[in-house]
Image 1 (cartoon, rainbow, N blue to C red):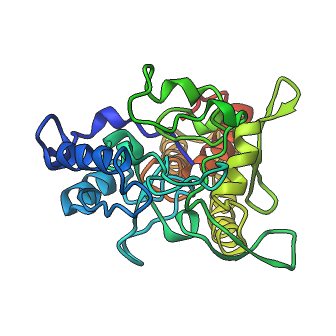
Image 2: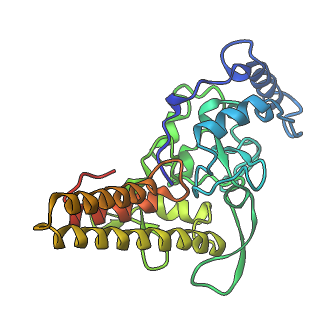
Image 3: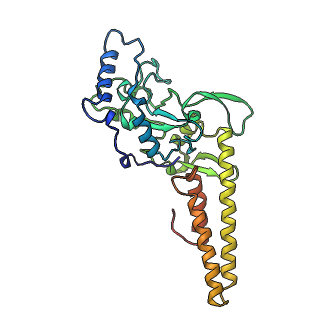
Length: 294
C-alpha cells in the first residue's frame, strides 16, 4: 500500500458541485433515509458512472488502493466505498451505512475484488480457509463516536480519530507497514515499541496476508533481490578496476549506473508492490552507498 495524493486528480463532473448528478442522488438518499420508507433499500447508481472509474484508475495508477496489485488487465476493478454506503458490519444497527457519502469523491477508491469483496481466502501461515474482505466493514476504536446521520454538525470528522483502518489517501502507509523480506509478508510496523494498530486492522480487513497475494509479492521480491545482487557485482567490478585505464573504468561505471537505474525502477509508484520495493531498495542503497531514499 502506498500514499496516493487525491489532489492530483480532478473531481469528475458527474459528482462535482451543487446540482450534479451526485448531488441530486445524495439529496434523494437523505430524503429516503429520513422518511417513512427508510428501512427499504435505496439504489445508488451515480458512483458507477464510467467517468468516475476512469478517474480512479488514473489516480491509483491502475492498482488496487490496498494491495497494490494491477487490476484492469484481469477485470474492470471495483469502485470501493471507504465508508460503506449500505450498511456497517460493526454497528449494533448495521443499516443504513454512510448513505450521504455514496458519491463523495473522497470516499471512493479503486480496489481489486479480493480486498473489497467478502470471499474465501487462505491466509499465510494457516491451512484453514476463511471468508474475509472489506465489504461493509469499517471498524472504530469507540463505537459510540460513529457518525450515523448526514447532518452531524462536525461532519465525519467526529469519528476520524477513532478510525482503525488506513486510508491511503490520508495516512502514509509507509508509516504503518513493513515487509518480511524472507517471504514478502506485510506486517505492522513498530511505533514507539508497539505494533501499529491501524496496520493490524487494515491487514485483517483488506486480507493483505492472503496466500495468492503473498506468493505474487514474493515473485517480485525475488526479482528485486536478484537485481540487488547485480548491483553488488557491478560495484565489485568498479572497485576492482580503480587502477585500470579510464576507458575500462568508464565501462564498468556505466554498467553500475544501468544496474542501479533498473533497481530503482522497482520503486516507481506505477509498479506493483512498490512499497515493498522501496523498503528493500532504500535499505540497500542507504547501507551500501549512503544514497538518499527513493
